Amino acid sequence: MLEAKVGGQLVQAGPDSPEKALCPACGGAVSKRKRCRMDGSVTYFYRHARGVGEGCPLRYDARASVRP
Ligand SMILES: [Zn+2]
Image (cartoon, rainbow, N blue to C red; front, side):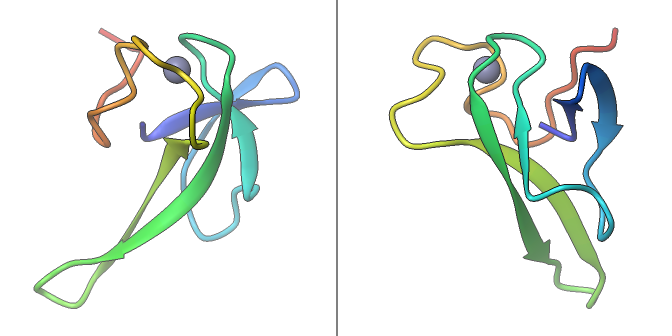
């Protein structure tokens, strides 16, 4: 997901965001990942730790957001 909870607040994944955070949907541990795109820009997102968030709606979609 693009946003995760850190210290009770939603933060957007980015170069300065924490490496470790919590999933806003299931509360499971997530870690920051970065992806280089074809055009050379870099995008950041959070992904569940291994074995965490089974069945979580945000688990399989890196671009998912808890916001409508
Ligand atoms: Zn989750």
